[in-house]
Amino acid sequence: MTHAGTIEKALRARRDAGHKLLVPFVTGGLGADWVRVVEAVAAAGADAVEIGIPFSDPVMDGPVVQEASQQALASGATPGSILAELARVDVDVPLVVMTYYNIVFRAGHRRFARSLADQGVAGAIVPDLPFIELDGWGAAADDAGVETILLVAPNTPDATLARICGRSAGWVYGVAVMGVTGERSTLASTAAVLGRRLKAATDKPVLLGVGVSTPEQAAEAAADVDGVIVGSALVRRLLEGAGPDGAAHFVSELRTGLDQK
Image (tube, rainbow, N blue to C red; front, top):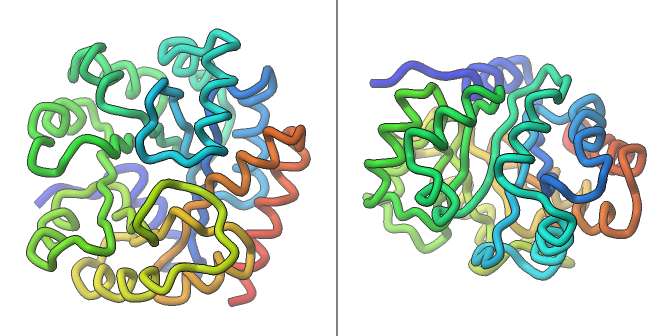
C-alpha cells in the first residue's frame, strides 16, 4: 500500500474539514498572463490547479480546450516553457499537469517525471495512457514523487474500476459523461451513478469532471462525491479575455456554489 502524497494529503485534509473540493483547469501558455491566472484561481478557492500542456491532437478535449491549445502552441508554448514558468508560480495548493502520452513518451518517462518534480508539479493526468499500459510511466512517476491521477469512465466495469481506484494517486477522476470535454446545459445523469460507484469503491478523494459548467452543476455533481474539476467553462472565459480577475471571479462563484451545498 502506497502512502498518500502531497495532493491526496491536501485534498483529504480539506475534505475532512468539511469542504467540497474544487480543481479548475487552465491551459498552459494561453496568453502572456496565464501564470497569473493560475495564481488567481488558487487564491479564489481552488484546492488544486490542473494545468494543460497543449498538444496538437488532444483526443479528450472538446472545441474550447482545443482552441486554447492551438492558440498556446501558435504563441510558441512548449512543454519545457510551460514547466519553466510553473516553477515561478506562487501558490499554496498542489499543481497538476494534464497532457498526452506522446509528449511523455518523446521526453522519456523518467526525464519527464523528474522535470515535473523539479518544477514543483505534484501530479500528472495522462488521459490517453490506458491503465493496463501504465507500468513504465507509473513507475517513473512514483520514483519521482509525482502522483498519477487515473480516470474512470461511466462504462468502466466494476472489477476494473476497483483496480483503477487502487492504483490512482492524488484523487480518482470520474469522467461524468461519455465524450470530450465541454460545457453542457445540464449535468449528465451518468455523473451521479458513477460518483456513487466510485465512493463505494475507495476512500481516496473522488472528483467528477467533464461537463461541469456552472456553480449549480458543480454543487449537483459534488453531492455524491468529494468535489469537481471545471475546465471548459473557465477556459472559454479566458479565450473571451476574462484574464486573472475574471477567472478568479468565476472560481469564486464555483466555490460559493459548492460551499452552500
